[in-house]
Length: 189
Length: 243
Picture 1 (cartoon, chains in turn red, purple):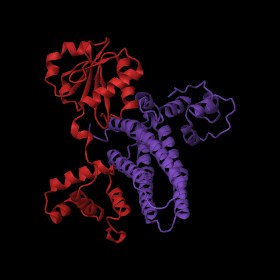
Picture 2 (cartoon, helix red, strand yellow):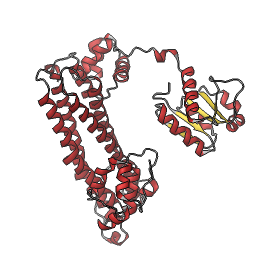
Picture 3 (cartoon, chains in turn purple, blue):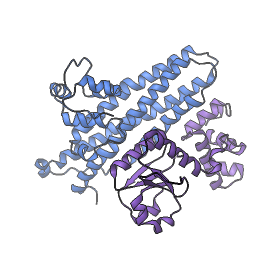
Picture 4 (cartoon, helix red, strand yellow):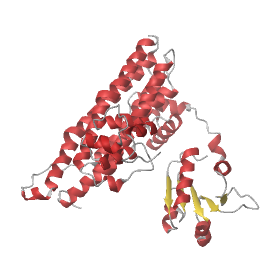
């Protein structure tokens, strides 16, 4: 879905853009929603995974936009004969709030990669090993040496641990390890 | 959230958002407003009503933050408010969470070791948090007040004292660190607490942690987005820092 992803809305109609922004925040969990009132060439560099565009901006810059590998949603004011949810998706802005939310949900679902939904959120054995060493007070370099893996691999394990558990700090990870019996209080340095 | 205005009754402002109660307390305003408006109460307490409104309207309101307007207020006023906020964390909110944690340990089975782990993490968090508050009070705020004095046109003739070169930027990093710790504490209580424990007390603790988080978010926003830019601007015109 939209959880943790960035969104960019490009529309000269601020009221429309703000309305969409608050719907996205209220019903989905985007990371950031930026608003731009006009098309500019820095669009390509923007981190957004989804870009919502007013239809006139889309039509005026269609060529350039086709080169952008982001998911595009075009804001229209009419009912489409054929509903399009995939790139570019269409969103009829004259719908009621409930209908808008339903349509948005469909768009995000259709565009979500398969891997995203069936991701295994349990820690792997290797990740548990890394976690235990972090909790015992070892730094990344020492962990790499102990497990005979590269520093880069340690960092990628740590990133995955933080993503899966939602715990960001070392003392938080230590508390997790203690609570789950992965280490004993005497192991903490 | 409804925009609060000077002619509105103070009681209605609280009905609209009860989380403002500790915020208005920081201004020295206590309950029992009767029919008085925000304006009435501010003038009774000698509070700048525009500043008061800016603070309460921006509180916890992610999408409404009048940066340019807030930056027109005197840094002395802003620092005074920030200090009061610190006092609230130190004397009210943190002790209340601490009491709840102690009650939790007391009421739950002694065999439950996980609670002691949580308490230890909280103690660590508290120590770090208080140290951060103290650093701001003993270094940052006096520095800001000093710069402000030097910046006043009348006093410009007074020879400029040499100020230690000092960067406000490190505070942003400290804020992030403290926010992350608080988030982890909350998250662990929600997801990983186990064994025998008093659920009602634990829920109350989580409530208080959310409240602290929300309040701190607002507090850091004022420090990072209001105070820091004003100070940077003054530093620049005093040529303390090469632009």
